Image 1 (cartoon, helix red, strand yellow):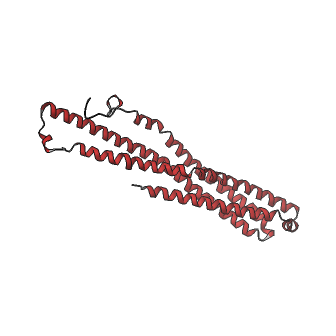
Image 2: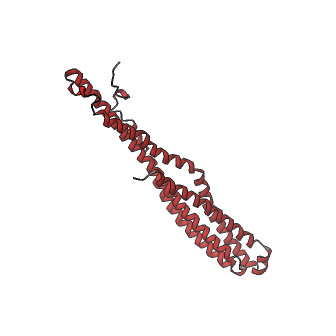
Image 3: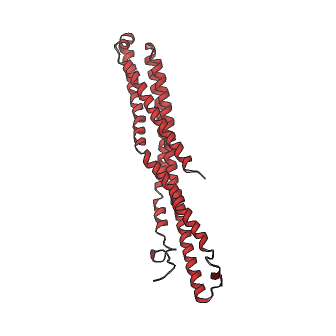
Length: 248
């Protein structure tokens, strides 16, 4: 069984990697943009190569911004995802565990004398105990269902962030390579074109993978009807209430 930490740790690690990737790619891109805009580069390259280089850098800038926008949105929703994970485990720890433990005690005689109850008293006791235990078992089952549903939603969020972290790291790496090559002015037009093409492919592939995870997330949310159906089932709760042990 996956623990709380086994879900939270990859999520937090992915968020950290996304932040580092964004910081690196934006810093290195700014270096490249400043370099291409410098009079020195204009003098060495000439009009046509400079025009091509600037176009490729602009294209690269648009791609970098796409990743930055995705990262900004994801970072803003870090705490809600953490809360979602915690709530998934809270349903198990704070609802299912104690209720199922009470259920197991319901069938155990509280007093040895109860074993000898007969006729009306014995029948009433067993009826009440059976109803109580059925209600507890139902609550435990519902807690397990809701916890699993929240867990699956949380897992799609973690998968999304891990995928985004990988994309940010790859793009940052390519932009950093471009910044290094930009140290040699004559290589800027070719390096910028290569970087724009490579990053473009990375972003296209990355967006497709992110969309897949987003679709899985929507599919999990689409199960809300099943959740409502579970919560609306009062089979074990006569009149929509807990089966009290004492009438009155």
